[in-house]
Image 1 (cartoon, rainbow, N blue to C red):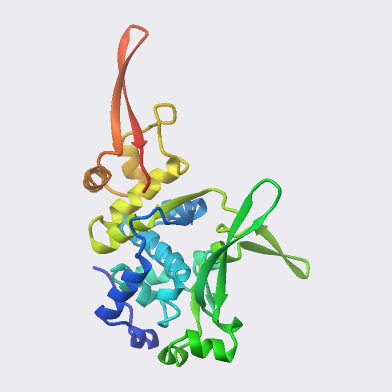
Image 2: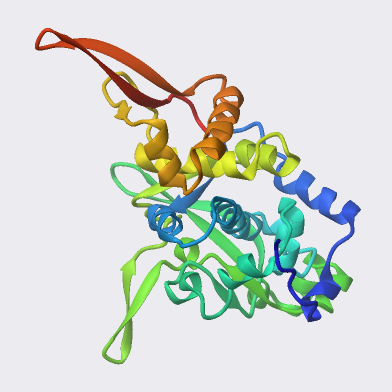
Length: 301
């Protein structure tokens, strides 16, 4: 049985069902497009090694994706409401519990390793800019932050009610600032922001996230899809890049029993119109027939 989190000051900011629906409508306005968020491969490796259930791993993935999403879509989230973990869970349709909370608190692995952090500011809007060189355009995301606005700009852009709420946000640091390490008296950038110079990541489309929030895809099947994308280096498979695997090894990979995995496998297979699938091939070797199972994921997700 899941242990509920004791009510604290954060709970008084919870939103009404109508407010949550308006937020979802704004954030997922382009859910049929190819808009995506990026998840670092290192986060998937962390989840795989986590000593917890398949369900908690899946919810942690969705919550991390939600943190990234509401920060990026600030015009519909932070600009209008005070956002905390409880509200992000509300937005995602997740039940907030103690096990989940501990994975995202101040002393957690995710905070200590600069995946997320508390920021005493919040984004107002996100835009994409570019710099041209001789060969190509280099695109990068740009956040307009609340504290960068003048008093007049704040009054014009921000709701009067929002101005009375806390100036705080959950920052997806890997996306906005990258990873820094202390070198002498200074901080050295070791990994650039993933939104600027992405390296070793998987993507999730807005549509896949929206379908999970709506209940058209289970959280565990979303996690299975992301584990598979990680195994395939975020690439669409072909007959030349197929991956040899079996159901037992996949179940172990996602931390589920074989029975639970089979349910997720069937759901994801149906959801993707069999673009995700396991196929058995039989070949003759040294005079004997040998059967092997290969993993395919042939579509955007």
